[in-house]
Image 1: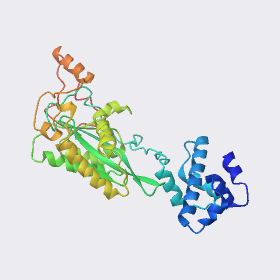
Image 2 (image 1 turned 120 degrees about the horizontal axis):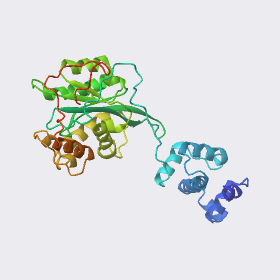
Image 3 (image 1 turned 90 degrees about the vertical axis):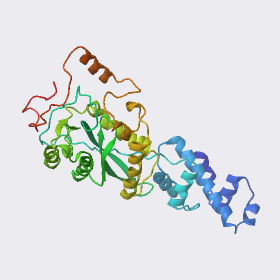
Image 4 (image 1 turned 135 degrees about the vertical axis):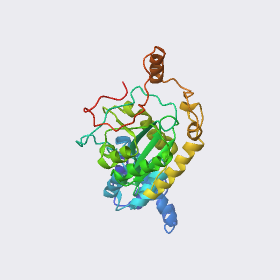
Length: 335
């Protein structure tokens, strides 16, 4: 900023501007009443200032830049904060927001947890294995402030279909339960042998959530570590939702998020082909049974299938889907 400071060191702002733009003072005064010229001059000066500071600090944000500019040149070349930020935006100088990611899983709750039943389990039809998870979505309050809402998803592991979802303003168990109740509509009146798999977060280990699973005869399975691979399908659908289906969206309210998620889920389930199910849509895959026609190699699936060919007993759901005790009080159902 040495050059700009030197050019602005006089007590005559008009002379500074004329020297900056290479025009005479006579020419400037000829257009002294032209507000547009004066505005353009101030904005060009601010733009040069921004570029000079960014050379020294590439990651400095718009608000700090404006405070620096106001402190150094605001009296001579005043520009409001909103206009200053628009200059950044119009010239491609606005930084990508650095979001502090919230923690959505709290496994230090002391509630009973359950063993991982799906380490070597491969479903062969819909409604045999559901996987659940939560993720955050950013809501922008203005250009510089944001907060989060939270998306709860339940995915059918065989068909890849999103069968339950809910968006809430907090991490309370209420919203995962809403997603679960939506998913349960799929199996009303049907005799199913079903596992529900999730991480060990307090929402999924809560008495309310667990009691609903037990009341519907659903086996409970949970991850045994913080490794995302233990709930890989749920992690993938979170990524697909945020970085594909909702990519680039800027939300200003939770209602906007809810509306966008509803459209995204419908598109994902009914129109988007999926490589894990032979490029079918999840809705169509839900109507089929048997081995899935995967268009990519899963080493996990290959390993389990090779064990089957070696006459190692196939992992499958027990016919008697009794609700067991928490982890440590019973052996795993699937060896």
